Image 1 (tube, one colour):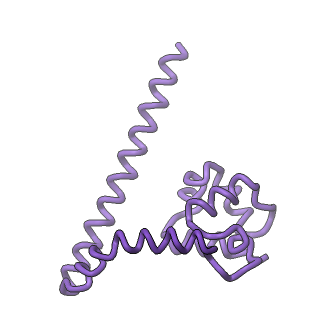
Image 2 (cartoon, helix red, strand yellow):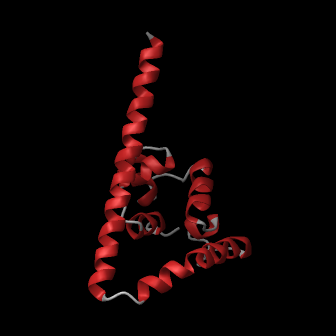
Image 3 (cartoon, rainbow, N blue to C red):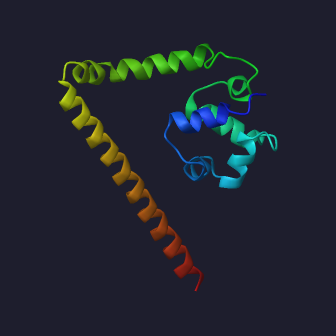
Length: 132
């Protein structure tokens, strides 16, 4: 089993081990061990990764180089069709406007993460207060 399929996913998405661990509802240490084949990927995490990243479990495990089965490819094509107009509009922008749009998207992603973290803290705070 290649030890870098999970690492490839993480890096292609620009995620740290901590961020991927949060998405997969596990620990950074577990992600590190999975990336280095120090232990087997738990079934629930494997299925979660397959669903989240729209790839087959065989691809994640390194059994196959085919990322998507027919259903996965069909779902990906539907998503691409939904986004086609956005891509087409992006392509006609000047290079500087493309860069500006990428910066805006990065900032929106950061704001979303910050908002989700603030919401999670609020939920934790409310749960803590309800225990009192």
